[in-house]
Amino acid sequence: MGNVEQARFNMVEQQIRPWDVLDMRVLDLLCKVKRERFVPPERKNLAFMDLEIPLGHGVSMWQPKIEARAIQALQLGRNDRVLEVGSGSGYLTALLSHLSMHVTSVEIVPELHAFAEKNLAAHHINNVTLELGDAAQCWPGSYDAIVVTGSVPILPEAFQHSLKPGGRLFAIVGDSPAMHASLITNVAPGIFERATLFETCVAPLQNALQPKRFVF
Image 1 (cartoon, one colour):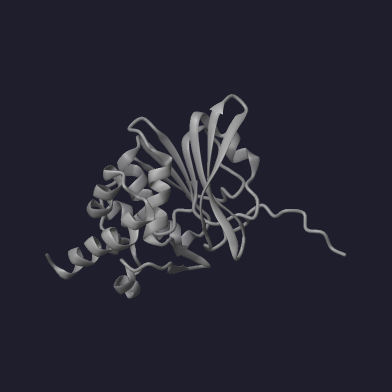
Image 2 (tube, helix red, strand yellow):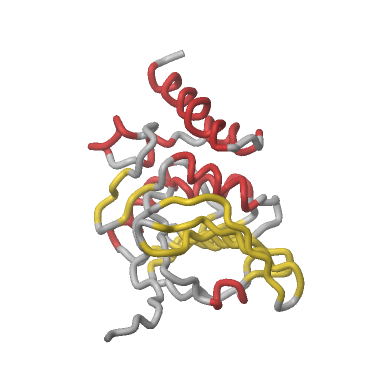
């Protein structure tokens, strides 16, 4: 086993499995999609470390264990249509694309949009539509799964209402340092179940909806 493959194996065994990621589809996918190829070249040595990797423009790749938990929680199926808010490097996009029918990924930063486009093209991933735009308040369409890749102080209700029946939404909600990863499921028309999965702290989503903050 080469150094890179050993580092990938260690990432899965030491960071991801201990964080309750036991779905073999997800674990196999993390070995198949080469994370190091989605990391900025100057940060390749960080590809398998348990930390956020800065992409510039105030955006970071999540820790590998958060990516894995998000993918596992969404329980994607082959016929699912997915919305990703924030393409970043395209790595999470690639993971989503392998488990679903189609991913619409929206990125507000032109440089990151181009970076994700280049990375996905290099991996011949063709079931993704990359959009340049602002999806902080949602994006037109209805989806089986939605993942918001930046933290939001409050979650716009528009995201919930874009879920198809049975649809799942993964988002990290709250203000630093107290944020929690939430999974919201559309269990019946107009009825949503919310589960808190874990606590974390990640970079904020650009243009995220802000609560009305009282000024005294």
